[in-house]
Image (cartoon, rainbow, N blue to C red; front, side):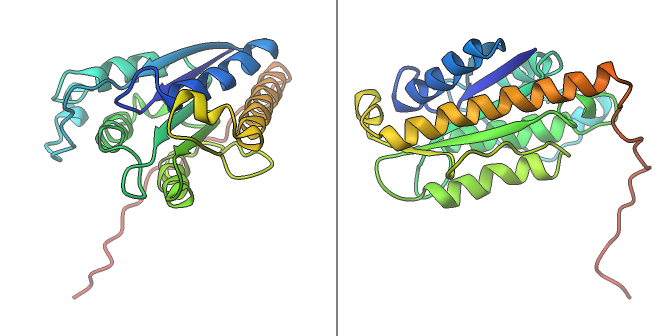
Length: 212
């Protein structure tokens, strides 16, 4: 079993990376393989709604988004980490998640995320953590992904990699989150081994709220 940890910070080795390292170390202790995927520091275009992904199976902008989506098909769980920018996730991660989840929502790729547990970890110097936590979790909710929680909201405070280590409660919450993720992955695996499979999908129904 494998968990992909996504670093949504423009700083590869900053506070967000340090928090994800804590989660990765705990997952490994629980027997879960990990891989960290850095969104990067290069500009990322947002989704333009062109529909190319529905016909060609991948986003029209061929960058780290398509690279991640291909890795996602082999992952069993996900942890998205981000710093707080203006009480929201980083701009790059916003564009990244919009395109990754939209381009993988077509029928043949929906299984890349569906029923796979996911979590978000928010890192901030001070405020904006809960708003960002809600923002990221909405991607999981619309994708039929179980949301993994911990004993507190998944947030750690600190302006640097050294600072976050002083937030003992926050780092403990991250370790508990990783243990909970490992637990659910093992439960899912046990279910599969005993013939418990995900429910069949109904054909999607789209309705328009505007009526004449």
